[in-house]
Image (cartoon, rainbow, N blue to C red; front, side, top):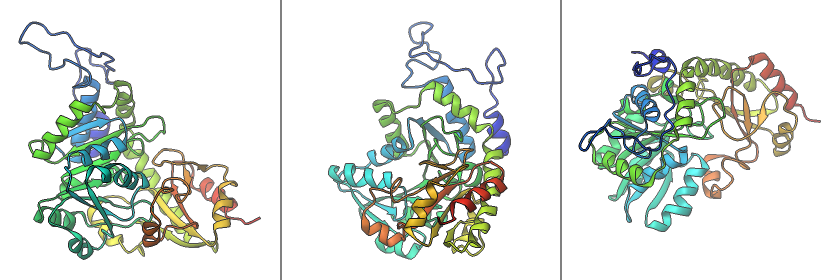
Length: 380
């Protein structure tokens, strides 16, 4: 089946009632028919029918063999770092979510892991930075918030040649637009709070692996079973409901985003626009090659910090808020919100400064959104 059908129907499995909406199984434990016989379920931390349904749909959408629905995107990243051992080295995109850097720097560094951050949009830089003990290459593409594009297939080839795993944070595009596993990535993750949910009403994460029999999959299975970061049945159901409209939402959002990006380019108060759907973006050709859409994340730079901060108080339709991917349009100030704890060195290398804004475009009428931005960009 194609993505729209998978999103609406999932695995196309119905229970005895034929219910179109998946049932919510709010049971912590399950009765066994007799000794040595089981329904396949015993305890809710191990497995839950509602969560299983969600994980099956994510396998189909990402073209993977095993998925886990987890309590947050950070829980998903934590599980990946948790399969490593002291002495292992991780290479990450230098432009990425600040929470990922915080987890690496403030938590896992103390457990004997080492981390380096490089411009993963340049494969030659990546190859030079790999060490004999590099076990994971971790990328975002497009990256957060400067929208750099990384060649997934080239990164996979480089990782595997060095006996490392390639992990891709696919949050910004969703599986509707990009499927990293099909380009050789080993693990894909999502903050499912974002586009997969799309309604800003749950916190969730997804991990999907390419090979269900791989050693790293077995390690993840053991960790998740033992530590219990699983998503609740109710939130799993809410995510199942949201995925039914994933395609129509993200395509409408991308359509709006392209119009807004072009409009921003013509504004005197805007000095730079970073959107992978613009033909003059340096990663445009690669983006068209490895994705079927450009998403709805835009970053842009205005001419002064005062204007950047001032426009946040003049918004009427956009919400000045963290997060992204919902049907409502949001404007974020990365330096004070999503990237507040980023090391200054990384900020300088990526160009993220006080003039950069990050926009998550929703499904509202695009002319209303442009009118709101036009008002907000006016200096008093």
